[in-house]
Image (cartoon, rainbow, N blue to C red; front, side, top):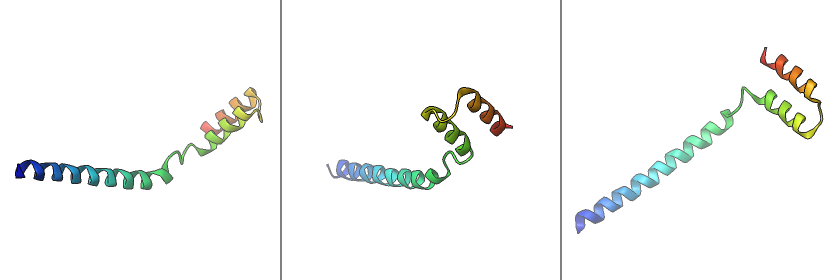
Length: 66
């Protein structure tokens, strides 16, 4: 019975440490997410809000991708 308790305890701590590592990685990776595509995402938002027409959207997207 003592062996089962130790195994469950070890499994618990492995899970806790795994979640802690995952959370730390997500905190660090978040600021770098979508950094290269920021202008294009802003352009998509402007198009979705109706601030620019479809032709303007396509032209500006083409310019950004060059």
